[in-house]
Length: 234
Image (tube, rainbow, N blue to C red; front, top):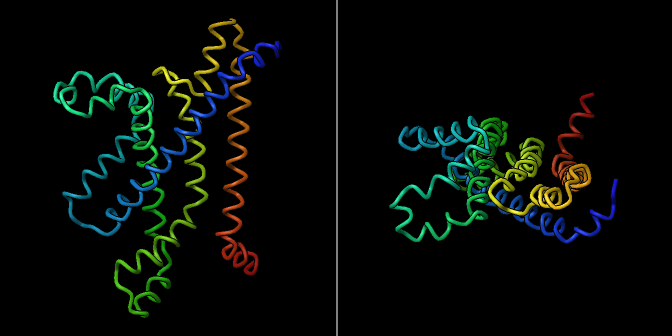
């Protein structure tokens, strides 16, 4: 393995790391708020005009490959004249915005189902206690249901964040220099796929295990009461 190739192109990999972390953090940030809003509507509304479009959104983004979604936005938006004639085209003609747009919607769809299931499984005793304390539906949602649901959803949500990190590798197909894009550039310059992509793989592994460590610490802190209850029953 020729380490000099990696050292000479360390700057490209650093750029790729920065772009990857930016895409992951922003897509997870926006996807989180999308998911919270949609999950709350799905669990509290019986209005089909609200719930059917949300379910269609979730089914589409969960049922189609992320690469197809990327192509539809990056290559497809330009064929609509009404988009090109508005300010929206200033955004959709940029690869970075298209990638962030797709990643946020994709993770938002998956996270919606995670949060919806967690909200539905809120212990009945917590809800009854909140009602007995005289809380309104909105106050109960804000202080009891959502915080409790987020804690229980953390393990599944952590997996979704890791999947989103790996999914950002597709950003390289629309000219973004993420970690995978950096590896492709190095390979095209030196025809050394082993050095280029092994380095990319190691970088992804480092970021992944760092995220897993942080998520495990969060689980140990926020789910400690459940672990104590489980050990006492055992």
